[in-house]
Length: 306
Length: 94
Image (cartoon, rainbow over all chains, first blue to last red; front, top):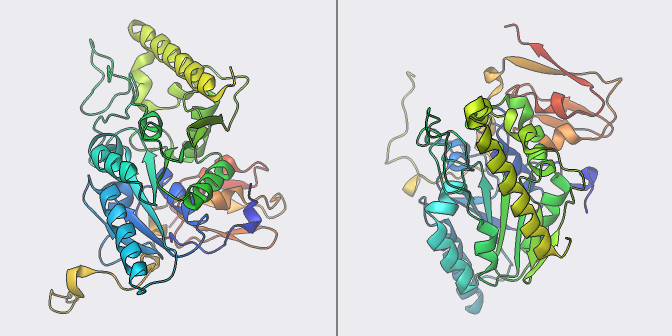
């Protein structure tokens, strides 16, 4: 637990970056930088955060930062960690350096999954943060493996027959936890205390750690930029986004939602689900509600709460 | 854009950036359509606007906050999240 007053006032992710107004990734990057414990290197896969924070010749980062290709953020983070280990062995370096890799959902769920899996399996000491805005927002809202059922994107448009994306979302933390890593967690920026505590905890873990954080996107999810945090909070309060952690294989529910709001509360504020409120697609909303309920039941059972 | 730009001979190898946080030179305040205005009387100093600001445009002070209009993009998250309703969004007139 932290207090806002105790957090460092200085921003290591500075103003002047060119993320859209109300961008969730900007909030997440700033919050992450508040949880650092020492010298840090940030590895950034291609994505909104990368292209908007370092438009040449400017950089919004005050920590060492390296841009890599779409697919290999985890591999590069692993390489940096191995290089520091080798330098320490030769007495050329003596400080502990934390390595954080940032990837969007496209760079994690689809393109970078293989590199992430390899790095987790080899057990490198780094933290991977997936900021999940649920589509390829940077290139103009294409569907990804993280796009939820029923969401309209440019490659899964809402037509008269097919209402948005037919498939469901992958369980990233399930995949990561199956590697037997020490720490994996989900988070939401609306619960800043939970998120910052988790980043710090994940950095302190000796070995790989993964944090999967919901990133509201006013442009791609189509809502008013002022509602970013509200949407991130609704995602948790409707049980759409269960916030839990897996520590040494043990699941723990961090935010209990005893009285969930109906999932329509979360859907109706976003333009990407607007078509579902036509009478002929009412069954899709029921499908989403059913999925959310089943997913919540599965997670709470794993956490031993049910 | 009339000033001459640096070429490949004058920039560092691989175009690495040697100045941390140089984006501070780029003022994003001109993006703003609505300007957040803080009512100092109502502010309870909870600093939620400070932590939720995507642009780091809220300056944390001892008991209250100030807005840095050089960088504020006017997204309105601070006004929406303020528990004391101390922030209002006013249309920007230039």
